[in-house]
Every structure is written in C-alpha cells, then in structure tokens.
Length: 537
View 1 (cartoon, rainbow, N blue to C red):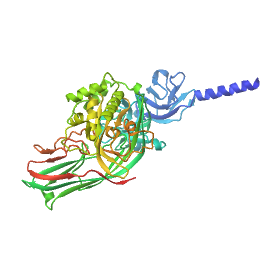
View 2: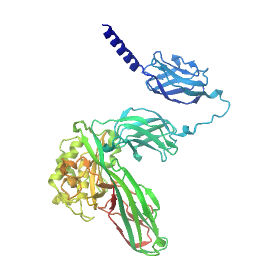
View 3: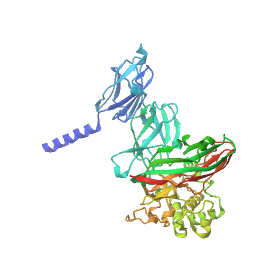
View 4: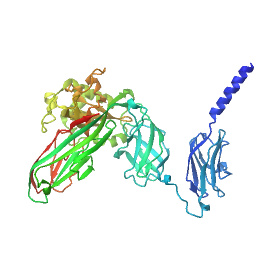
C-alpha cells in the first residue's frame, strides 16, 4: 500500500512538472521604449491565460490591468509611467524566465548605439500557424524593408531521398501581395512543405519561423535529382542593312524555375548579353558594327537541376476552384495565342468527355484517358505551321499537338492547365524538343501530365522496371529527364517601335517574340540549335 502511494506521488510530481514548463523569452520588442508604449514579449510556455502569472520590468511587477494580451507564445503589456531600465522576466507557475534587457528611452540622455545585428530581418509571428499551397500567410516582424526590391520569402522544400537536409524554395513574383517594414503577405509557393519560413533581404537572413503546410487533396514528393550541363547556340548570318544604325534583338529563353526544376545557373554566354534577364529571356542586341567581321553567333551554357516529381491525390478531397483561385489562374482558364479554347470542335469534344463531372482531378484524368486511347502519337515533330485541328481529323499528332490539345480541352472544362516546353533527355543523353502539361489542384499546386509519353511516344528514359506502365505513370508524375524552358505562354512586348517580329512555332520554348529587327534591317537568316546535353551528374 505504501509502495502504491509512493508511485502515485511520483506520477503526480511528473505531471505537475510537465504541465508547468519553465517560461522562455526569446525576444522583446521594442528593446527601447517610452512609458505608455506597448511592449511585446515573444517566447513559449507562458500559458494560455495570465491567471497568477506576471511580467516584471526593471524590478517592477506589472499589474494585471497593464496586460493587453496573454497567449502561450506572446504577451503584450502597456508600460507604466514609473517603468525603469532593467531586466524583463516572465514569471509563471513553471518558474521564472531568463532575462532580456529593456531601456527606458525617456531616461536615456545620449544616443543609444544600436547592435549591428538589429538591422537583420526578424520574424516575430505569423497570423496563420498552418496553411496550404496558394493561400496567404501574413508574416509579422521588423527590418523587412519598406519595399521588397530583391528581398524574398523562403519556405521549406524537401528531397525525399535526402530528407535530413532541409532545403528552401522561393516564392514566385506573383505570390507577393503586400510588403512593408513590419508585415509581409505572401502566398505559399508550389512545392512548399512543413518546416519553417525565413525572410532574406540585402541585410541578411532572418530567423527560421515554424510553418505547417497542409493539404487534404494530396501531396507531392521529389526524388532522383539530376543535374545537367545544357548548351545551345544562335547563329545569325547573311545580314543586309539599309543603314549603319540598324538594330537586331534576340530573346533567348531562360530555363524555367519550378518546384521540380530547382536550380538554373547561366555559366557562360558569349558574347555577354545586353540584358541577363528580361521577363524570362536573355536579351542580345546587335548592330551593323557587330557584323563587320562577318556572321555572328551567341553560345550559352546552363547548369540545370531537375527532380522526379510524384503525386498522391485524394480525388474525393479535391474541391472546385474558389473565386480567388480562378482569378489567380485566369490566364490558364482562357484562350491565348496558342491554346484555342474557343474552337467549336474542341468545345464539343470537351463536353463529350467531361459530361457532368465537376471535380478538376477527375476531369483531368478523363481527358488524359480519352486522348491516350483515341489518338496516336508521332515520333517526329511536325512542321511549325501544321494546324492543331489535324489531331481531331486524323487522330494523330506530335507531342506539341498532344500538349496543346490537352490544355484546350481542360480549359473548356474549367480546369486550369498550362503547356510546358523544353527538351526530353534519353538514357544516351540525347535531347529532343518536347512538350507536356500541368494542371492545377487548389491547395496542392500544379500537377504534371505527359500525354505524348503516356500515349506511347518512343523514349528510352523511364525505368519501366518500376510497377507503373507509361500510361499510368505520366498522369500526375514526371521523371527527372524533362528540362523546361517555359511554363505557359510567355507574352513578350517589343523593345522597339515599328519593329519586325519573328515568332518560332513548335520550338523548345513558348514565347511570343524570338527575334526583333528595326525597319533598317533588310534581311537576314538565323538558326537556333536544340539544347544539347554536354554533361550530367
């Protein structure tokens, strides 16, 4: 009986100890303030209610009426008129925290020398403890800068094969909603996982702040990283000028960054570009003097890292798009210069395939199954001016036809879809121009689809010793041997008034302008090589 009482007492002591953890103060803001100002204390184990806990500043125990907010991780108090310099403590049933130093600004006769570290960005809190891809996160802190400029917010990203090494993914330009010195509103980027967020400015990197990424719709995983050395050239010859001040501009596509194509580095460009990055393209400008010695060429080398992306979708949890989701993806729900959504035949076929189905994932699968079962894929690429409508007439087409038709059918059914252009690398490291797709699932992000490979395009790349057949694998998954140069149509603006513009159809990037010349350029010829693989590791 005595032994039982001893055990019970021991368990009660353990419970009491675990229930009242020692409070921890990680930060106070501001460190220097006047009486009457609000002092915010950040940390943990404060308790969800104040009860008999209290804050002590400079030896003065603040009254309960001074407390404006008390949560387990944050306390806000109004400083009394008689507050003094000194140490700040939080005292709870769990004990007394370690101290932070506070200075009464009104009592400081000289300028306070600031700590150089105080210029670093600091995250105090987020309004959301957890969030899903595409949704807003509000970050509170200081030293973010009044304008974003080159600053960015990073979210955790993870390679499933090196899970112990956490990496980060940057938010896209369109993800930022608001930026100020003390507050940022940004949308969770595609590919983000639970872990932490950080803010990086020109002054340095902030603390890591915990963030949970949730999605009932499913999840993405990334593996089988491959890094390629990619080369391609542009040759311009037989140029005839009417004047020495004639100008030619060439827009070289830059490889696209995405959740699965993580790294793009330009290692060599000869000659140096006029502009290294202008709306996703590198700009080369040439004049008459550049051709004084004959023809001109521009060579480019990139290092590009890609990952195999695999999705696991809970179809029953995929919901129809919200109004905000539709607004943000409007460009991928409507017709553009290469995706003919308004074509009557395409509209009729889309309705035939989709029927009454509303679920975006199920619609994407219905269209994929229809195309892989009813259309035959060509191993060669058709001429640039070949009409997309041929696919509906003869039920045969190349990977470009398959990608554009898939996007057109999905957009007609209210599913956001984008064509992706680039190159496909086989096991012999030979590359060929190729096109595939991505469709959008709210709260999860963009899901890859390669209808041409799913339909049997000859390709010595994917290891079919895995359980999946090509048709099964290439819906929702993609191997690491696809290198993207554009995601969606890149609508570029001319750099010159009254210029002559060249658009290159069925090429390794989808952009509205490839070449541009002033009126004083009479004629020329150009040749763009398909990107080649000169190394892999």
